[in-house]
Length: 51
Length: 490
Image 1: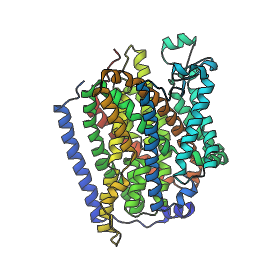
Image 2 (image 1 turned 90 degrees about the horizontal axis):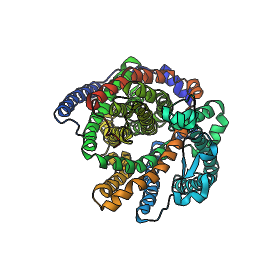
Image 3 (image 1 turned 90 degrees about the vertical axis):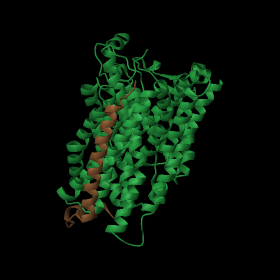
């Protein structure tokens, strides 16, 4: 597909609403990520870098 | 990216990527193995050219080993060029390249890139500390350190891409930043291992922190950027997945892997990759200097930050090298002499941890897409995880493991000889870094991208990167690495 077609496609494309599965993917990723980050921060606090 | 790249189908793109990865492993192992032979007393790579900071150009170049001093700087440069030309020419045959075109183009690429490196080592560019300035009799200098040569190579490539497009087209066959940086990363395993061997506790602690990078890149960054692309900018799913992957994980590899996983048209992730390269260039020109100014007292925070914020392997790892050089120079000017290698090792560890999981994330997305969104007969298979795994990382891990074993698990004589052998391999790592920087510059045709109307894509990238990724990356780096410094030179 040539670049001019893609350019027109980007600007003229119809908006696709977020599907429930996409909302789940975003929600679960973010939620799990924040929880794991909190766990890692706690581990970092109790097992600090040893020099 | 060239129009030819745009026309590549997904299976061909994947096959080429697999071959490029294995080629990088083979060449990287060839350099590493040849360097190791020196431990036994036979120096196979001592003719390789090194560049020192200079005012007199005649003093700039020398062979790495004194035993090869008879070659002189010019002879060493010629020998290095010839060796790389032969090895890479044989290698690119496996990638289906036109060897004659490659050889001609590589000659020009090597000449311009290494000339940039030599210019970057000119004392008025590179000298940093007052002692260095005094040594060379300078009243002033740009204080870029000799790794400023990377920036010069990048700028040379940018000038060619944006003002001499025909030359850029002619050089195309040898403009292979992914191949060059993958070879460099395989070789880097030796330097990282030698560095880590000196402080195993610190090294193993860094590995744990690398896990935080994975969590952040895949789960936090990706989710937020996918939402921004879909909801704020109205991009379709087909565009949003490679965009989110390119901005949050690893520009080129992740965009192509996840784009392929959701069965996007090949042109989409390849065009996203072009944008990633452009933004990586902008970041490399800015972030190391910001790190030097604001984070020189937190060197490991700086190293992790570069690994989290810059989204191509080439720019991130090489950017880590520049950051290390700049921060060590500033610290040295304050009387603090850090051991070299730790900042670069932190950047490399963070980036490699992010790369390792590309295949798994691509499979997860592929599973969701082929089972819940675009259901069809072509379902995602677990074998894709191995297919999409960046094989060059296996080379890095192998070189690292062997070097670490030689450093801590073999005889004292071998352990003592290892740093010199790693240093010899490192000469080639630096040369591949220079080639990477130059190649990235040549690929960054800002005007062409603008003409192709990718302003909307660039806007997503800008908002995500400068509004979120960079600052969250800094916060996470601070949370995990602040307060801990590299060991000092004893």
